Length: 514
Image (cartoon, rainbow, N blue to C red):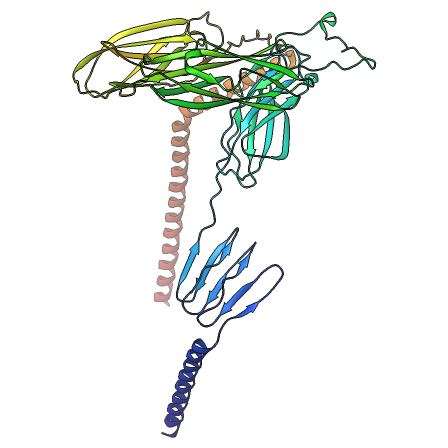
């Protein structure tokens, strides 16, 4: 009884201590304020009551509270509010990877000669305007990686970038291409490759530029420029205007007088400057205001921008799709496979949308292959019935004798005097001629070993086949032998048993006599 009272008293004392602890904790929550812990690298407020201040750090910030959080914390890289009864996490700012560039490759004069440097260039951009960009360039020769270059120059958004490969790396009949990848300090974009460039000409000693001789002869001046694109494709409605721009860069070491001419598209483009002087290493941005008059016939118009400077010519192909302001039809053309070879078939998905009030009508669909000068290579046309929308797949065969380069799949739908047109671009690549296969020379020693191995394998297979045929007989004879042995042993045991029994009977008989 006394022991029971002692235990009960002890339990009451522990309950009193427990409630006393809770009471003191509540008093602290009502009275105690925050106290800071400071460091040159890290600052935090540890709060065991309400209140407290926000804390700031360029690396890491946190508020820890036993109670309700009364504020948030700020940081350039991390934000967190933590409470004993309440927690909120503010995610960091999202950084998007750089935009995929469209790299182009050419030689200094565009003639693809071995003594000319190669240029790999593009305009580099990022969705985050404040990001600085570094560039990695890979040079490929005959589809094998030849050289990797890193340009950690922190380029600004929208810069015109150019990588130069020295002519000492090139030889006649080399096939070169380049790839570009951008890095903004946090994310990479996807690798983007240029088209192929073939070195098709090698100068003879008499054709070398003046001053290019060895032995301390003066280095010739370089006269060349590049542009950031070789194709502009836009869609514009009747009465509307859109702005495009091109960048021209002087990559030589002498000043150039640049002239720009519009061919077959004068009525669609107003250019900011037709001529200007460009110092070495400088870039000039030329604005193009592309427009269509209210009464312009809807169609796809093809033309060129010709840029010339000191005997060097660069060409930008231009495709302008003029759409009706209030269209009765809209048409979209999309080529399935962008790179093809002579003799292949180019396939395009054509989607026609009837945006007018008429239904159950027959329209005329015309589709063709055109080069970038507008010349028709091949075409077809057919009548189609349409209600509100129609999607068809059309195919045209590429001629065997077509030249390599970029071409257009042109589609046009018409109903009476109403027209809508669209185009898509594909590329015809050069057919690679396969080198004749060298005859395979076989060493006599290896030939004998090979024949012997084949004979040995045949013999082994023959033996296995014979064994499978006689195996049942072998098994039968083996079992028969085992059975005979077993019977012999049984007979022996019987004889031994009978003999033992006879001996036993004799013993019994003797005992009885006694």
